[in-house]
Length: 113
Ligand SMILES: [Zn+2]
Image (cartoon, rainbow, N blue to C red):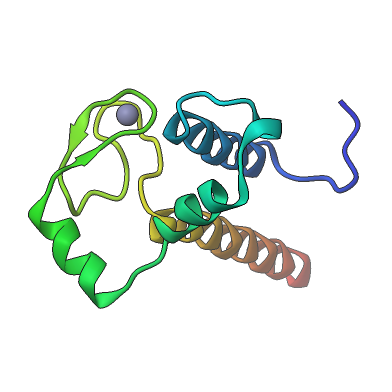
């Protein structure tokens, strides 16, 4: 598969997981048939309003991938490790960037010796 930019396989996996979650949340509807309100509803589910944080802690969360009931505060599914919140999703990306930076710095030090 030819891609425009060279994304890491890990990042590609995250995007695929996200899109799978989107598809599942719309009862496996083909993407072409998904309407604008459905997309907005899906994106809203990532938004963290005060109200939502409150209600989230009250009800348990179900994994969109394997339907495992997860704890309301879990950010990853306990069973299949699917990313359950946007926070966890962006954190995964950030962690990778930090690691990349550390590796880069280490290589720099090696060169200096
Ligand atoms: Zn799961």
